[in-house]
Image (cartoon, rainbow, N blue to C red; front, side, top):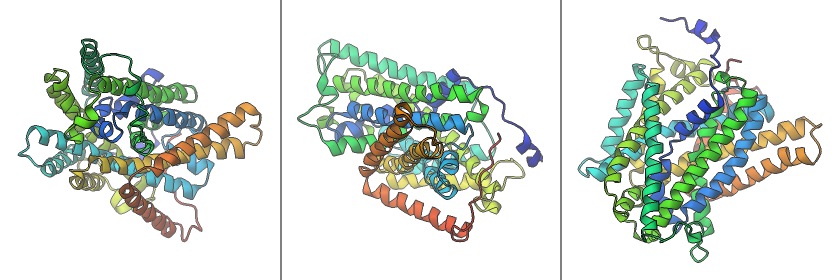
Length: 454
């Protein structure tokens, strides 16, 4: 068996550049996710899905900027956990990491659930719950034996998603130019229709859509493997956030002008994307999307399961979580088998959301929004409070006003999350607080920290 202590002394190789980081971030957030939520948010926002994405992009760009500031001074793999731990307070940092852990734990569930819903749409005889459990089992086996998806396959899937998105935009544009849909490529109502605008509905959509931008957060976890991270991270993080926002908005806009009445005519919001292709006379695109998106979701779920199992292993190894369970590797496969099984069981909870994809998405957003709020707060605490020399109008704007705007908009977004997500997320946070209290003897001791290679 390989000497794990010796492995831990090995430094991560710095090979990543800005273009590679942007590619990684866009791949992580999956460009076709904009299609997955099309039906849900088109219906709930009365056809203002593009507006919701525009608002989310603005909110996330401010938060992404805060990430660039913190990554510059703490170029470590721990991301939000490290930023808050170092700049605010270790106990608060632990709880921030704990809450954001929800995102990573539930990502495979969302992916498997999407596949289950879409396959059930094609083959109604196969229940969603059977598909979710079968996929979770497959994911567990693949991760336990340590198999890795080849980078070539990942690249092909990313290209396929971007190609599908581009073709869909073109087909919608051609349909509109030929007199279909809105009949014009420039429609203000496709972004905001004052007569139908519902503030609560649009901000509820924006709140949940925040999780669609986690690709820039994932980029920060690669800081230790990046060449000159102090300079490369800023353009990479902002590139992923703004790039994703542009792709998402343009796609949603063209879908809206192609089917302006979609909000009133979509039969099943969970699978609404499949209903638009017959409308524009391109039925075959539904089959193409089925293959591209499900394959992408499967790979994303497999990778997500592998990533979170390693994160839990790191927490177990450093005795943040019980070491006998979370810090144990399989003697045969040298993979964190218990963690993989735990994550697989959690992924199976997707069966309870078979008829409520929105509820599952909101639960994932709970952790993301709180984590983003705390990263903005860490900028204020580090640059504005701890470094008192950072005065002057420019610094006040960069390190106080912008983070406050980021926090404020995210708090508003959090307010519009569903009650169920807040309750379940609150329970998870309460468990974290209780665990931390026990671990630190009533908060009298500092919590153990994860060790990241410098």
